[in-house]
Picture 1 (tube, helix red, strand yellow):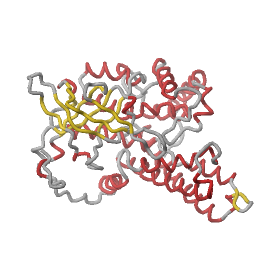
Picture 2 (tube, one colour):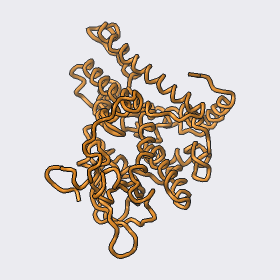
Picture 3 (cartoon, rainbow, N blue to C red):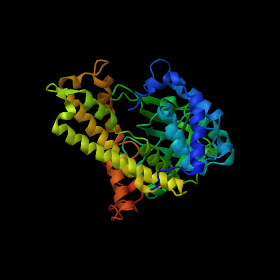
Picture 4 (spheres, rainbow, N blue to C red):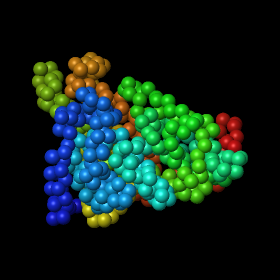
Length: 419
């Protein structure tokens, strides 16, 4: 690995640093330092408005979605220049939260599969933050088996060529704020499940779309249920051919794992600081041998994640595309966050059950614990990621699939037909 900037990268870093110093919303800096675990940390103003204002300022100056082509709202920058911008943006990067799914997952899919007309219409306002996108994939009965989805798309019988959508999605992040959604549906139940899928994009304010926020354990509602009752979508809003939805979805999923895993925090710096400040029996917690042992374990994981990420950055710098090993980052970081939060609350004793401004470190570990189970599910559950690492990184045999060549309608499920 090479940790040094090339002369060109150093010049780019200097340019980025100067622009951020002159334009960043510095009045939000202290609040943004508290960001994380599904919260922007902003309390002095509307967080969404602050996020949109910063994203629009970046877009107007040519710093939004740097690696996208200029005609789609980007800068045509190299992948490593994108990494450098993220490093220099620092705490202000927390303002990008509402746009992560659109920029990291939906945008690349639209760019790869949509018509040129749609790309020029949809991508610039997505890059600038003027329009927000969500990803309509997971379903109540599907679990981690995306190809087992049941939301149906059938051709309208009026000869218009439109599609009629019925069904539901769940765990859709940011749907309540989104203008557009990327939707995968089943169009043919008579073929094996992976072959009967078709991808569309649609307006979230289309008649028949009902978004219902889910109240989470941490008191927030970042996830949603989305219901479709005879929603009409023009065939022009189809991505890929009919039946090609699985292939299209792989574009989204590949970018999803990279987007989520690369930016996930474990909370280790906060825990280390807490152990320096907190006391056990009148002495700093860090003086306790068992506490130091746990800190050492977390430090090893944190360092491993850091250098695994640097391997990906080095690959980007060389023009290479990081592979399935990026699943390691999300798998390790998600589990570490949950374990670390539980340890921090154990150290707090009875105070660990309190969640208000009087809690140590402004209840950061309480928020971390309530949010961490979701990090181990979204973007691929731990089990899915282990399969990816085992099969595609380590070369182990794949799981046995008894439904591989079975038409979807013939796959048993509680004795009911899928047709």
